[in-house]
Length: 313
Length: 323
Image: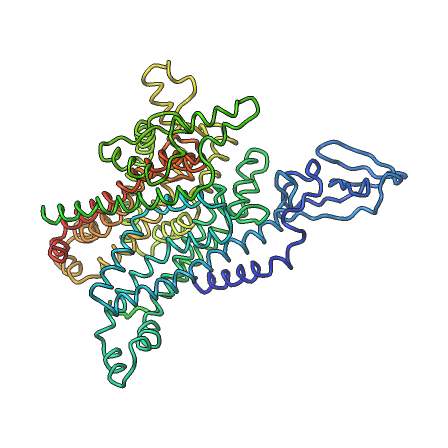
């Protein structure tokens, strides 16, 4: 079960990384808004150049005498060979197009790359920051511990939504801002976890023997204690990654994420909301992709946890 | 117990002050103010200047901060520059609207979650367990606002059974009571389902996991040995020990009661807290943002406190550890 989930995640990750090479067209290309809008999945269309810089996206194209006959935005049009400046090119829309005639396959690939990439960077940042603060608090103890942890408590109390809204009001939306804000609201939980894990390990034989052979405190944490918390950190990181993917897509959905032309999965969902009545497939793909990745991450995390947990607990 | 509660209550005030000051400072960095929109063709350039003068948005930040704190202490939240209404009134109305949605959602979420989780744990490994577990894992992974759009597509666009936005029909004011109630209920259904389904799935998975662990414990085995029936074992011995972690989980969900889900409220045009805060941010409406933050932070802190108190009341060990 989880082996399959891991394979699925790996495949999605590879495809997302390779998005620029796999996607058939640029994600924001609008060849013909009127003719190419809201084409359902698996549409076979043709691009006909009717003027040097004017392309029509047409369907059901056929040859008539000395010209072409085709459907464009629901109307049958006939053009003679003289009017067509270049030979028609085939266009295949695997997942359909959106309300502006953009290819959803390309948008989904680029959106996955952006959304999952942002979430991964954010969780990595939080892991580093959370481990640093958590282990510093655990090792220092006393006042430093108290001050750091009260600070973390105060930050956790800040409603996530309020932080996002306040930041969005202050700064122009950008990828960097999204990553920083997501990381800023994620690391605090990891800091608490690392602190409690290291506190529990501090009195263990592992720590005592490392100190006995003259290990410095920094080395004790970096080389011995943090690696010992590796499995719980990995599990938590995977769960956080799932949450962050959900959150990032919600932010871009509200228009508070990365601005266009960068595509996030939330942007595709927002464009699908506008065309819900006539093009319901737009919201289908990003929603299914997010659900698959989130479910996959949770399944892998939980079976990893069962496998690494001592049987007696 | 009372000392424990009092100490925790005292800690709320400074935290609240820190949060509000942070947001106040953040808002000072924001470019533009709510009266930028007044500068349009057809509006005299003096209009926005006069409004700025009247609302005092151009005075030094330090002066406004001190004044704002002073008024806050007396319960005066000022007037929202973008909506031209008292902030307290706006926030109170939005919070009431959010509560209508979230109280129902929270109750349903825990009722359905506990029931399904208990059923799955009681018949662990059977088809019903597999059905609940796989269904819940799938629902729990779905973004709630995506589910909202799918539900809108099915029930509003395709079938046309349920309204897709707002809290009531436009002409509902003059309807008789029962009809108005039915109308409100119909408007409540879709946003409530979008909130409940993923959350209930999460609760069900959690209850199944903890209950299944509890049912493997020694005291459950001895209860069985004494001849207790399967149902009695699950309900009396298993579910009771699951109560504490579930109460904790409910406490964590409490803050969301008033904060609401901004995405769901935006999708369904539900005039609640999340949507109000979102609009306030988009309009650079500082008094309104601060009013929203005040209420949301207060409920987050109160919710956490309530969760801790419930745990302390249920489990004496928690009380002793922190007293």
